[in-house]
Length: 79
Image (cartoon, rainbow, N blue to C red; front, side, top):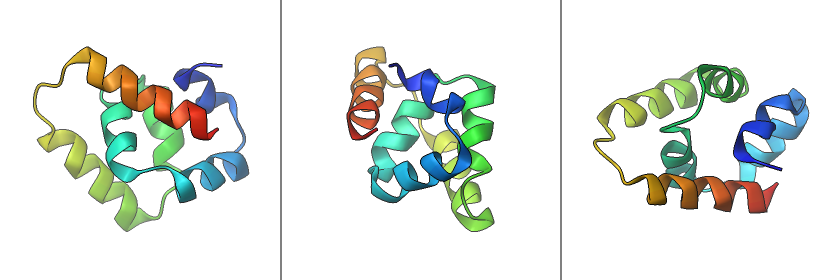
């Protein structure tokens, strides 16, 4: 099971994940995620939370791939 596989889950499952996942890990994990994955996450957040997440993603500068992969691994562990 990989981070990108989360996009295959139904909305209810994603909402449960979003309740418990660390928001900083989520932003970092989405840095290299596909547009499909980002869209799936955004549609399961409130409008305000989605805007906040997008804003954080835009202001997130250069990040080491190792850090992104670590954040993705932590999110997958929660799943």
